[in-house]
Image 1 (tube, rainbow, N blue to C red):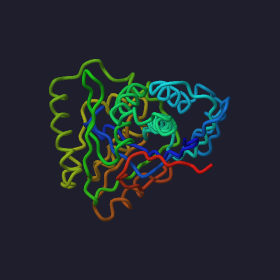
Image 2: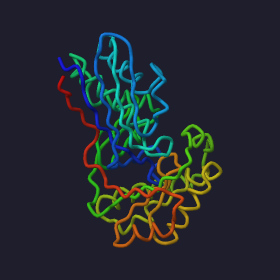
Image 3: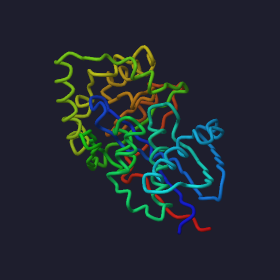
Length: 299
């Protein structure tokens, strides 16, 4: 039986403007997690982003999700040795918690002797329960562009290819923002006109990403969530507005405060650099074609 596994999980950007809690994009920025079964105890090593989480013990998200998934398959996991190399910024709207959740579940499936009992649908459902919504976990699992939705029997998702010319650029600030705070600013109800406008723009965005990138600016218009979150991230909202005035399809990534620009024209990346200056870390990425993967580690 495999005793140790490595999981590679991509960053993600959810919402993409109008696709609130539904659309997500996998990005070529990866966390790597190694999980080894041991006789007893728990040790966690973290390097890179989130090093301060190493001392959380059984409260560490990867340890929690591993044990939950292992128990669902059957039985109880004993000791664990977890090593994380984190590159996805924490609390910045780039899916770091989704990557950790997916890593824990996939590691459990790979290391359990009956792991095949946990289907891909089961993995999505469990990851969604842990995260609360599927828009980040779906692209982390499947790669590319995903559309996710909830049904009475659980979360579902479908995957689409993105036009090769589309290049995501993440503009990452030094400040962090908890998802709970960002969600707490959203109203319980919104005007019907705003909901209708977002429905149309979300549908248009799928077409724009799939092969009509000249529509990206119009397709990323949002009236449901970004403006309500301005008190928590005024610099991000201001940057989105400045970039959009220059014709660049910029949105808040997930719950923020990272800004995601969906570029496709020559020179747009240079234009972004001139606009943001030195106060934002610019990450020029690609759409990740594949989701999280596992591989055994030789003992």
